[in-house]
Length: 76
Length: 145
Image 1 (cartoon, rainbow over the protein chains, first blue to last red):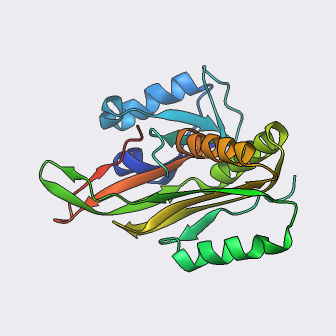
Image 2 (cartoon, chains in turn orange, purple):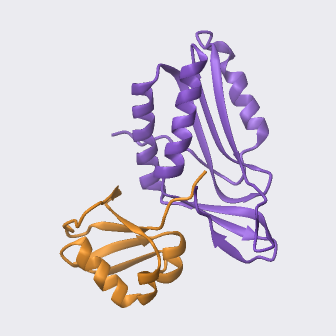
Image 3 (cartoon, rainbow over the protein chains, first blue to last red):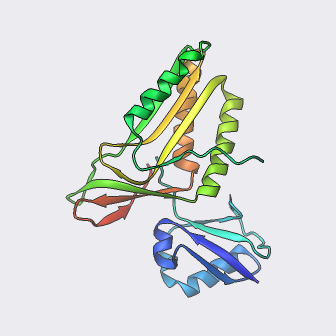
């Protein structure tokens, strides 16, 4: 199974804005894999949202989850 | 859940749209006070470069769900008659309007307090990103203070 990843702002400049990625069990594992695939990610600030909900702790990833990589918001 | 209301418009918010929006409230005669916040793109000078425009992007599905949640909470907290919110996407030039928040109530305190809280929550909680584009076409990612 694959995860759908969406990236925005400064993070999208590193990873591209939408791609699929090998499924991993949780968001901590995903962060490690992403930072291995895109080393520049280690140097930018971002949080994750799983299926449109911002997470604050390690979160289990269901099959087909959509994970968004969100740099600090700067609307308005 | 029904589809949340879209708040995004492409490009700058035209001043005429703001005037029309005010005029539409003349029929709602229970209103005694309107509070309006307008965000305008500031020509900041950073490292001797002037900001020419901000380009806004969003994670729209998430932003609209979050905005819906904020709207429900604000209506639960303040006795508002109505509330309208518009945020720009894409390029907005310095001097143009990029955010329009409009709250109305019977008395001014509720409209003013609700307007302030909505603006703060939009800036802190909506997945929207601004890229400040300088006059020499270089850019930096905006940071909210």
